[in-house]
Image 1: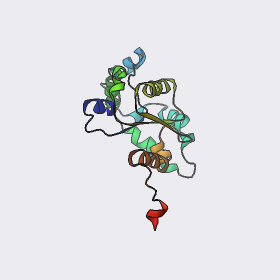
Image 2: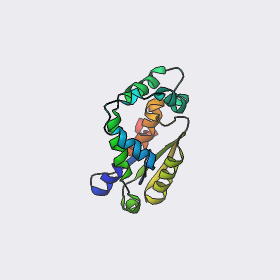
Image 3: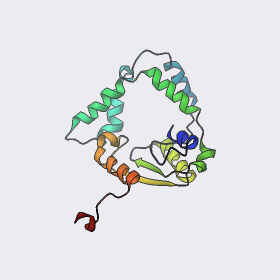
Image 4: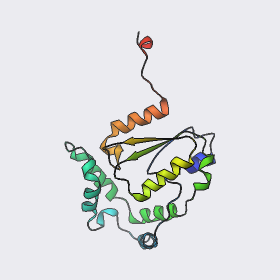
Length: 175
């Protein structure tokens, strides 16, 4: 959506920060089948068997060990997502293809990369890196796929620096 907005209204979008970004993501037939089946579901993500175990396996190691509330917040909030909504979003993603238009995005773009990205996400970021003329890549090491929960201070600092520049007062300004 952010890339589309930058393409549609370049006069209103002065910069983008993308994490988990892509220009095109085609779903496998099995993913389309599952999304089609879930589109009519009245259940939430929390009702899926093994969901918590999968989330713990994939994400828990990146959360600070001294604050279990952040991981529990992830589990609770994502668990409330209706499967029908997820399915609808997945099917919408399947129809997006902006690869041929990336060079038209004129604003600066920050591509935030983290550990834990799979092959598809890595490939998607590489397409963005090659196609966006004003892209800058930053790695947030040791944060996992949810830095807004695992290390929000680091993400906020990165975004502040990108969008506002270095706001550190010089020695002359301090006086």
